[in-house]
Picture: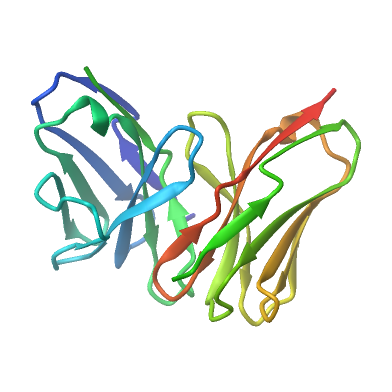
Amino acid sequence: GAVVSQHPSRVICKSGTSVKIECRSLDFQATTMFWYRQFPKKSLMLMATSNEGSKATYEQGVEKDKFLINHASLTLSTLTVTSAHPEDSSFYICSASILGLQNEQFFGPGTRLTVL
Amino acid sequence: KQEVTQIPAALSVPEGENLVLNCSFTDSAIYNLQWFRQDPGKGLTSLLLIQSSQREQTSGRLNASLDKSSGRSTLYIAASQPGDSATYLCAVNTGNQFYFGTGTSLTVIP
């Protein structure tokens, strides 16, 4: 149980285009989903926290107009990188937590974004 | 703000050795601590979760301990195997936010 999927696993896009990444909890309802970004050989950095039906809370330094997060249902959150630039190339990982399970997080497999 | 440090940054051991990875955090007011494994280019695999009220957790050859008062956790890997080669991350949960360490890159030499 507690499986989180991400789609796509890899995406290559041109500069200036927008890319949408989906994060789904497959067998549970996720009250809270998190989006992380990982630079090469660095640890994960939390970008934003999203609760179903409300606006995401962004970490300091993360542009909310550039990284649009939508958590429309208890099983789906999306991250849209708008007007992507090469510096947005990174590994994006989502996680989900179940209310009542003491905040254990379940991680998706990640999405590798490359912006040309 | 919580800061999480992992030592060493990299570790190379011969197959069969027992080893210890260290994780320290600056604020002892934590909810739980998780150890993860990450293979190159892949997502995170949760290894062990220790609640703040627990002292240790075991799964197979892995044992994680937690000393909340001193801000330390260790991950003990017994009888290491080449398949254990990966980056190991610890993450501290302060309530609803995780703070990750920078990881320890482990190489087990056959």
